[in-house]
Image 1 (tube, rainbow, N blue to C red):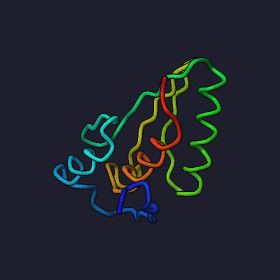
Image 2 (cartoon, helix red, strand yellow):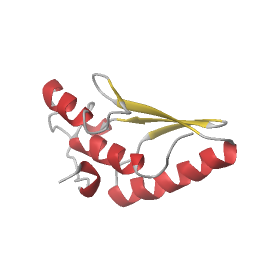
Image 3 (cartoon, rainbow, N blue to C red):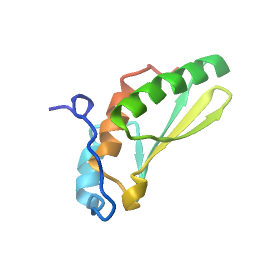
Image 4 (tube, rainbow, N blue to C red):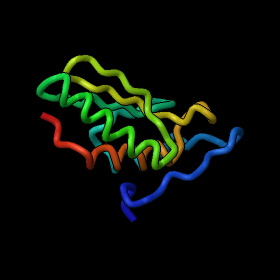
Length: 109
């Protein structure tokens, strides 16, 4: 099953973050995201501010439906998303699931 077809699951405090190898394997499925130790990040570029805000609103609907929320930085025509599972201070499968769903939203300019 593709990551974009999966559902995020509730994460309990105290769960172990993904091991580095597992995170690297999942990162291959969302190649436009940059992987670091405790997060994945991606910049989306748009024609203007309105398109950036429209994108942020669409991804907010998905994030709420999945109950997993990215950190969002909007800078005029650019949206930077950072995904991490704060409850466990690291990465979970949910971060990659949400990244895959977000990738399906838009073709960046």
